[in-house]
Image (cartoon, rainbow, N blue to C red; front, top):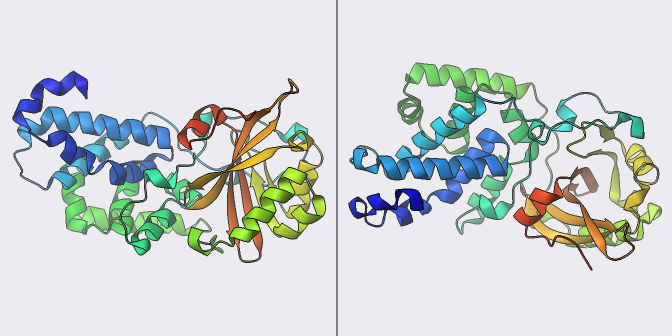
Length: 328
C-alpha cells in the first residue's frame, strides 16, 4: 500500500485494522472467484480502495461490512470479465484412460486449490471445520454456476450468516430481491450432487491410511494401491479436461500412459480446501533428483480414497503451499 501511504496521517492504525479482516475476505473472495490468486488480487484491490476512500467512510457502517461491500464490488467486476471456473468432472462425462483423451484448457478454466491456512481462522474447531467445509472444491465449483450477484447473496447469507436486510444494503437492492436471488441460487445448487458422501474432515482422517498411501504410491505397488483406492474412485488432472471414473481406469492410467510417475517422491503439503495435500515429484529426465509434477489433493472416506485431483500448475501452486521447487 506504499502508493497511498500519504493518507496515513488521516487514518492512524488503519492498515492494522484492515489487515485484521484479510483472511476472512480472502475466504469470501475465493468462494466468489474459485482461485486463490484471483482472491488475493481482489482482497489487495479492496484494501487499496478502502485506504483511499477512508476519508469518505465516516463510520456510517461497521468497517467489516464496508470492506465486504468493497470486496464484493471488486469480485463482481472480475467475474464480469471472464468465464466461470469449473472442475473437469463438470465439463463432460468420464473418458477412457488413453493419451488421445488428454486435452488442455487454459488454467483459468478450472477451480484452483487454496491452502487452509489462508482461509481458516480462529481457535474454535467448529468454526475452522465450517470454513473448510465451505471451501470444498465441489462446492466452490458449484458456486461458479451462479450469476455473480446470486453467488454473493448465497455466500453472505448461507455461509457467513448475514441477515437478508444486511445483504440487501450491501448489494444496494431490496430484501425481496435478496430472498428471490437466494431461492434461485438454492435451486441451481440442488442440480449439483453436493449431497453425495462427503469426504472426512481432516481431524477424522486415518493418518495411517495416508501413510500407507504415500508408501504405496512411491513404491508403485499395484496391490497396495488397489487396497487403498475405492472401487468408485475418480481422478482428474487440471489443466486437462479429461477425468476418470472407477478404480480400474485410475490404475489403468497410472500403469499405462501415466507410468512416468513410477518412482516419484511424495511429501506432505498441509491441507487444501479441507483435504490432505501432497507435493509429487517425478524422477528428473536429467537423471539427478526429482522435478515437480503435481499437487495431489485427496478426498478420503472411511473405506478408502474417493477422489484424486492432480493439479499440474506446480510453478504457481508449489510456492503457495510452501513446497520446494525440486528435490535433490
